[in-house]
Image (cartoon, rainbow, N blue to C red; front, side, top):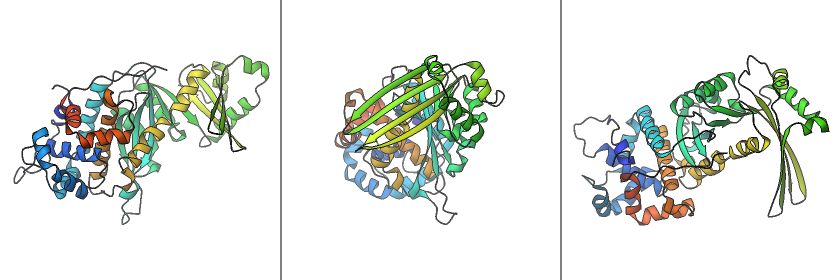
Length: 383
């Protein structure tokens, strides 16, 4: 059917020589996707498992020549064009999500530690991920050589994805003029953390909030909440200053021309009688209430807790050793297709990721439905 996962990825150009080619590219990709949904991070064990179910897979998925060897899987994902694979992934996600103003896109980098090439300076490869908070699916990724390259690669990731009307959050490494400019150029908004990588402005903002009088505080938008859970008490206070003159005075108006407000998050945690304090500051490209600012600041960590953690725990990303040619980027994207599939079947909405993976394992018809049928458009509550 039009815009099904199978139809979209069937358009991927096959880079292999036609001579001696036995397996269709789309069949190799779909089988690898099914094996990834089982939690396999290596092709040797994946191929062994798929071979055990070859008769069933051929019947359900319409395979022409059965299940290929682990060498074939490995060779294919080494040569697939990363950019073309990514382009189709974005086409697929766009068919699934109707973006609306206020939707939240979090960007963060994640290491793939086992794929480190010890013979090449031991640099740990990183993948920049874009995650749609509230909806819970991945929008895109960008491979980077090391974490140090995040600043220069974030604008390239932003060029790949649609962020119009969305609010983009990034940790302090993203609080750079070139990134703020790119977000606004693409008609998005931002809520970016301000840390000591900008010491002068950080000190100014910290001093300003530390010296607010009671009367000044009452003129601002303030949100206060308390959460108690299993002996842990967390008190949160969020304050937003949207005064144009104050913001311009605290920040360089040329370098920070898109900033319309500054926010402070004050966190007090008490666990087993021990209390810790934290303060975080953010720059925002829009005038915001404290409640809205609090939601974006807190929801940013969904990318770590709901994506990166799942990729490592359930899809074993950090244990995947494939690192030849295009394998790291292509297998990382394959895991994100698998991750998104676990989020997209409304009948599985209340199940854990592990239980969803078990359902895919036990019933191939569940997987068949997800790849051959057009999936319903997903939505989320707007902040």
